[in-house]
Amino acid sequence: MKKLLILFTLLILSGCYQEESPAKYQIAVSPSGVAYRLNVTTGEVWSIAPEGLTKLQENKEITLVVGNYYKTEDGKTLKYLGKGQLKHWQPKTAEEFLDKYKK
Image 1 (tube, one colour):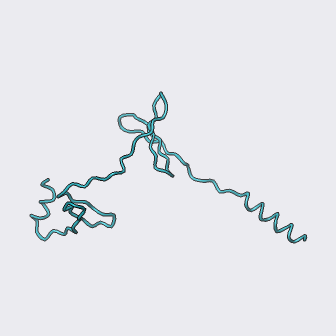
Image 2 (cartoon, rainbow, N blue to C red):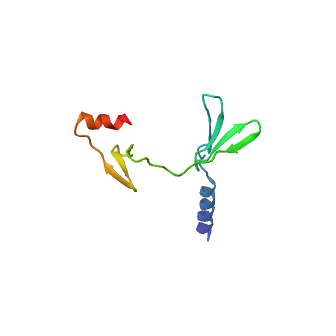
Image 3 (cartoon, one colour):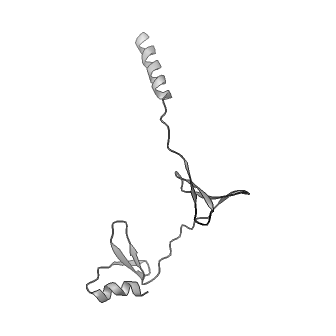
């Protein structure tokens, strides 16, 4: 019984130790002087003004333009063909490469 009480006390004490969590918010100021508050855990962005905080609307929709080139996270370049189709793009000539920048 005594061992059980000591074990229970140790478990309670170890549960009370809490490591400091990183800052939840970051403040950024744009070159035009507007201050923003970013919630680093949720990604919400708020504009800071003398009137108070204003939540900025986030457009989560991504619009792809037919014929434009997009780079993936792993560095590959894709060309959007339309109708939800992307084609891996690897230029064979300098003209093909320069065509990417003509638009």
